[in-house]
Structure formats: structure tokens, C-alpha cells
Length: 405
Image 1 (cartoon, rainbow, N blue to C red):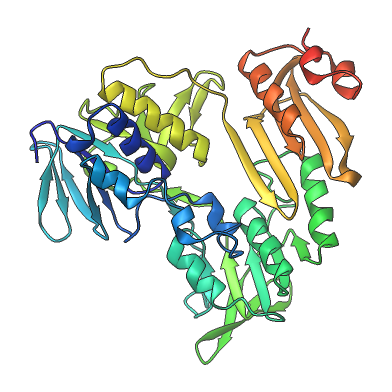
Image 2 (image 1 turned 45 degrees about the vertical axis):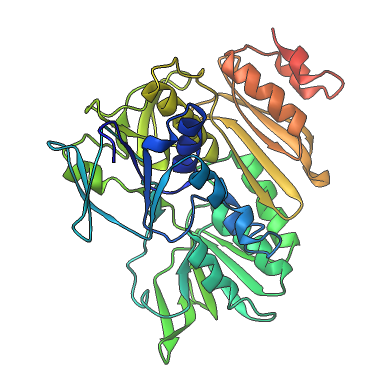
């Protein structure tokens, strides 16, 4: 390995994009990428949607094909786990005791599912969905007429529930909060999705805190929650935790993520961090954020690549997210954690509407359901901190772009 080596720890979408960006700048021969799964860097969003449904093959998940890494001289150490980082000698130590020296280290360690330490949680048939192997294990038990209980009414749980019910499973969703996707969307959108899933045949329960799991012969058979729910399969989607342990043990600062600056650098100038594992100040939102999104992973990868190459970073963008459930695409932009007005445009009954979130007259967020045009222009307006006319937003005869004051 060269003395100017770049080591990437992690093999998710952020790591894959970073490797691609560095190769584009001619630095591929300096890069080694380490991942604890046996797979090439891959996209995770399709796991709970098209890949689970069997609509796309495994190779469609990969950020780049194997030939790309070979052509660009990018070293791959897959199926290997990093034990620790020695910042003094600038060396990454693997679990097998071998070491990789680095000039620049990038942590793209991602996040992991939040586990529920409840009685019976060790029973066979209880799953968390995070990786390719998880999908294979879940899909192997997808049989028509089987009972699936999804614990958690967030994006992943609801996406999985939508696929399962369309495959003929009997699906129950148990959500502890009083509404669905409470951390990601406003009440009007939560209400729409509650009705949508009930219409599609989901047995949905809100304010439902799971107490335990019961089994027979080592297999899960029942979820105890305000009574009981029969279950042949249980999938838990209770949020995610950032993988910060390597950074913490190396003495790097963390606070709900590895703390990084505008260029994705940690306090150690030789160490960067990108993706779900990071906490970064966002100038548009004006506070530190840890964003679990493809957009953030790709943007931070490009920012880090530019910094490593001594180039100016790309412009900061408005955070955005999406979720596909049935034939409904939800697109969200902004982080409207504090707003004083919510304006709805369109018709939820026709599965086509948008909710605009305003703060002191400025557009700060949007939840768009099957409204890609409204989403795209709103993303620009949010980035401009544009003030908008509420009456014009309500009037479908006026284009959203013309609502700007």
C-alpha cells in the first residue's frame, strides 16, 4: 500500500459513492475499501421494497459492478471487520490482526437496527431488516396465509408490510406512537397512510407497545401487546443507531453520530466520516443533524472526495427523503421540526396531494404524495428560504413556483 493510501471503512452507499468519486479524480489506485459483509457496496432502500418483492435481482443493488473496482485499482477487503483504529501510527487494525496504513481514513460505518431487549426476543422467526442476508431470511418465510407482525410504523416497517400483504400474508402493524411515521411526516400525512394501509388489508394498531414474544419449540408464535397477536414471522423496525464505536474508541468526538465539519472532517485532519454514522451542522436547518438517507450519504461522499482532492465542495442541498408503499410515492424535503402552518393542496382520496409546512411565512418543508412536480419546485423554494403566499398554495390553478412572494 502506498504512503498516501486512502482507507474507507464501510461498504454501503456512501462508501461506494466515495470510491467512485475518488476514481473519477484518478485516485482509485490509492483506495482500499473494507466491508464486514461479503457484498460489493450496495443500496439499502430497495431492500424493503423491490428487492424484497423479488422485482429486482441482487446485481441491481450494487453501486458499481465488480469490474469497476478492478479497472480503477480499488482494493476490496470484503467480509472483514475492523477491530480498532490506531491514529498514532495511522493504521487500521482488522480482527485477524493485520494492519492497513492510511494517509486518509474515511469512516462510512453506517447504522444498525435498534434492538428490542424484550422477553422472547431471541426466538427464531424474529428479524430486523438491514442487509441483504436479512431479506433472504425474511423472504424465505413469505408464504401465502402466514401471519406477519411488523413492530414499528416507520418507513421500513410500512414498506415491508405493503410488500407482504400483496404477497398474500396476513399482516399486523404495531406502532407505539399515536400515529404512523411520526418522526418523518406531519399529522395529515400520517392520517392518510393510516387509511391507506387499512384499505389495503393491514391490521393496524396505534399506541401499541409490545411487551414480549411467545414461542413454541424455539419458534415465535405470538406477540404480546394489549392482548396477543398470532405470528409466524415478526419483523422489528424500531429505528436505528449510528455505528460510532470505532470512532469513540479512537478518541474521536461523537454526539448521536461522529461529529464532522462542513467538509466531513472529524477533529483529526486525517480522518473523515460520511453517511448515516455522522452528525453535521446543516446551514439551512441551523443545527446538527444525523440524516439516515441516500441523499445525505451521496452528498457527504462527494463533499469528502472534493476535500481529499483539494477541490471546492459542492453546494449544500436541502435534505430530502422518499418512501414507496403500494402505488404511492411519498417524497419529503426539508426538516420541518418547527412550523406554524400546514397547507394541503390536492386530494388525499385520489392519492395525490402535498402538505406544505410554513414558518413565519417561509416554506420549510413538504410532504408530497404522488406529486413529483410539487416536490421538485418546493425543494428549490426551501433552499431559497422563500416566503410564499398561503392562498396561492391552496389554489391548484396557480403553479407552486408562482406562490413565491
